[in-house]
Image 1 (cartoon, rainbow, N blue to C red):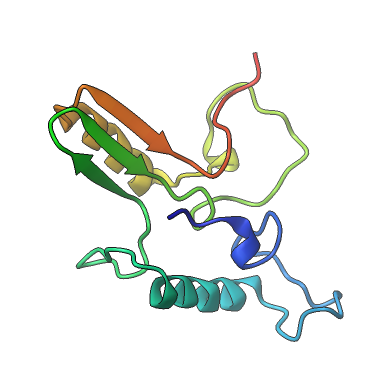
Image 2 (cartoon, one colour):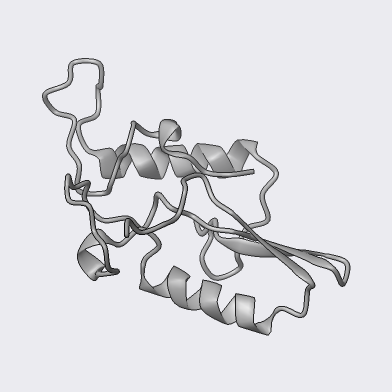
Length: 127
């Protein structure tokens, strides 16, 4: 199961507002995202992190050969931008510092032959 932006609104980020869009009764995307996250966890068979109940990123080993790493590219992202970055910077964050540190550590610590990263968006930098 993968969290996507359509549970809230297209290309959302926490600071986004929808006050001017009459289709929405709630203007705060942060409120909408919190509600969507709760509904996602309530109705999807996800394993919840003991200390961070709303956290979606996790890893799932399947025997000695495969480990799947599910990342969350929605809940930790910065505001949308027309810029096309060629280097990593906090301004264009998508994973957030804690999730990025977890992913690096988890990939390094995994003994699986095959490591699959499950993402709802393509990952890459323009050359």
